[in-house]
Length: 299
View 1 (cartoon, rainbow, N blue to C red):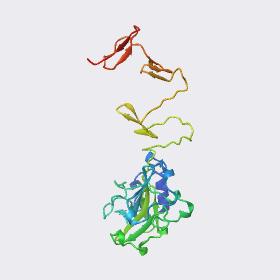
View 2 (cartoon, rainbow, N blue to C red; view 1 turned 180 degrees about the vertical axis):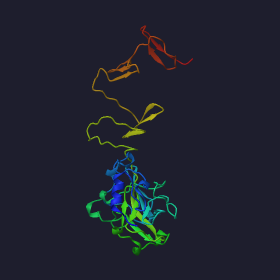
View 3 (cartoon, one colour; view 1 turned 90 degrees about the horizontal axis):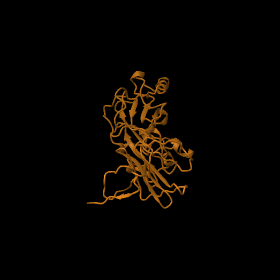
View 4 (cartoon, helix red, strand yellow; view 1 turned 90 degrees about the vertical axis):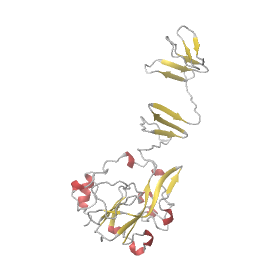
């Protein structure tokens, strides 16, 4: 088995992934290739360090790098990949690692990891550096060995970058030639775990104005959070200050019929007159159309 470039390009153009030429095109799983999902757009890409990568050793396996209180990326040190059960030319980056006997390449497995950070995020001097180098870069480091102990891997187990292709988006590793069935594959890599367009959107106040902004769950700006809860808009923060450029009308509140309910001016509050008394409540106040004020009190 080998990487068939013609089949691979055709499948990618058809929005399918390519795992092995042992499969027919119709057997490959559909995935985002030409269309990009919101979970694949990195909204904190600017926080990915371009140099001075924080991890490179075994003691840091699974560690996460944080910026501004957010976890941006996770480091995997010599993670054992899961083989395809069709041929030994395709391996999947899964966490936890899947069956030793392999998994079907026709389905995207639960636990399959994606969104790995490629060398395009580093400075040019680190373009050819891998994740375990003395000065590490984002290039993956790949090993093959008969051992199930990643700690036993040595220089003789390193796989040349000329012998495989690693898809940083899907976490699929393909070898030019199939490996022996007794060989295991290990990879050291960085994975992006920061926010995406699906989970959080950051807008710099210097990007100028924008139109509509749709937020599915919550929107945070500074120390204030705006979220929806059971149909209510909930604002959470330490304190709020409203400032209007119009001194006569600082704030207006209308009901669903667009009738004025409350108006706040410079030093005064105006309530809309009620022709029929509302339900009495302790602490309530309303103004009647008979030019009288009504106060509610307990008992």
